[in-house]
Image (cartoon, rainbow, N blue to C red; front, side, top):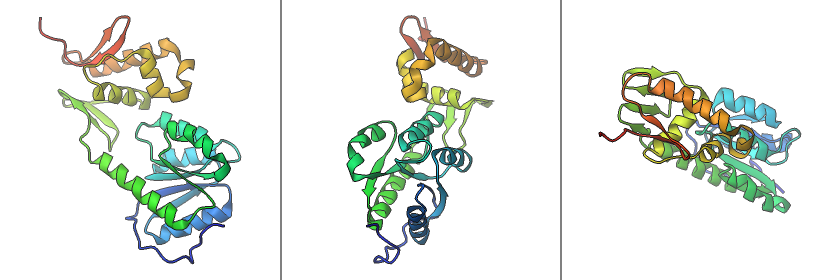
Length: 244
């Protein structure tokens, strides 16, 4: 049996953070929405995976509570697509039946952050939500990745090379961030593909990665010393070439 809003009240913990609840059972969605709003959060709901992906893209919530069993896409597929679309995707708290716990290994491995089992207790959901949001806030406080005069702004999702703004696509932004946080290290095409496209990386192939790197290199290195380099037979790396 699920908890209810008549349980012993928990102190308000939210600070207006936006949470998206994704569950096709209206009773559960309403229970979670009411409880989370009373705890100080702003809440939106979605009943399908497709609707969830659309709302995350438009509204950029701080956290997603995601049922594993949905009528169109399962929760794992939704999570994969969230990760592939945005490296800075919101944390995901899965809702799952107890007899589906073994499958959570997959869900947590593709980008899910935590889970609660049905039937759940409201106090447990609130505690896990608070913990995930606290972790997300700590990550936001970390310095933005940069190298020399190249800087990424994680909040605005923009990049600059000196005074020059770089107009990047989401895939180019994710690739540049991956190169920046691994500055000086050679990254293979397989590593890049796995990072950018998760489970679907093999269907894109080396040619797609080469074209993506080429477009990014043109934008980053249009002026100033080249920062993105090819190590033939091995992959790509970001950094300054040593002086002869």
